[in-house]
Length: 322
Image (tube, rainbow, N blue to C red; front, side, top):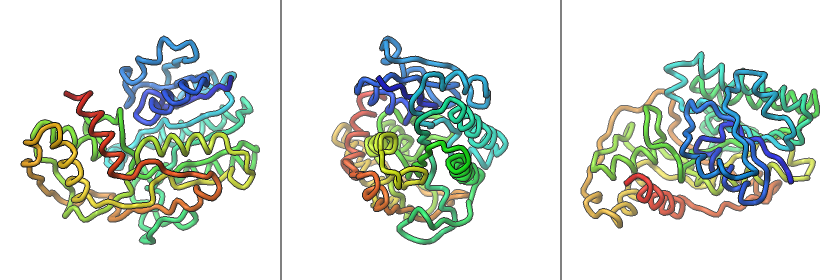
């Protein structure tokens, strides 16, 4: 039985990874300090004999050492996400996302972990205007958060070359799906808009709504983590991959999708208007990933386009938020 450590395992992505791998008979240890993760995300796993919870902070090196004991693979999801959060508090974002990441790398190296797969970010592309985004062409970061995620890639590259630690980074593009938190000041756009529509409140779009994103459903992200963790191709290891669909959707089109799918449960939602505000500092206008590298080296085949993913996500929110 293989043993996986999932840092940030009580969060949105981490809890979905936990559920998936427990169902495939892996042993899973979750490390989380519940700063952004939630206990209700992991309640279904607590009685599973193959599940172990360590409550702790990746900024504490001794906790990181404890968490990697007896582990084969690390799926590192723990981080303080959100561009606005990093702009408001760059020091804490750096402590968690850089110092905490380095702690995990050192602990994984010392424990001779087989492979370290980590959550990178599309924010690394920064001010690069190239579309689609290709892994080896990036620009200058536009936020403290983006800097921290790029530093992760640099550290992982050094650890692979210097210490022989196998590392793979997954540049997530606007991940959404079940368990993504709709509450709080830094809620992602899709769960936030869903909650507002369900409450008959008008969502606010930053800017004209013409900005576009490569929205990526959680099941595609799970597939990428599994393929990155298990690949035996030498050329597929010690690199980074876009983790996306390879298609982009404007915020205006996103709203149309959400209103259409939510109106199947509540027809009044179709009448809710949208308001527009100023563009948000640190936002890039357009994001679209090339997934060719992942398709070739990891045999990645996304199962969910934006519409299919939104239909599943909306159904989950309707059943769990009402």
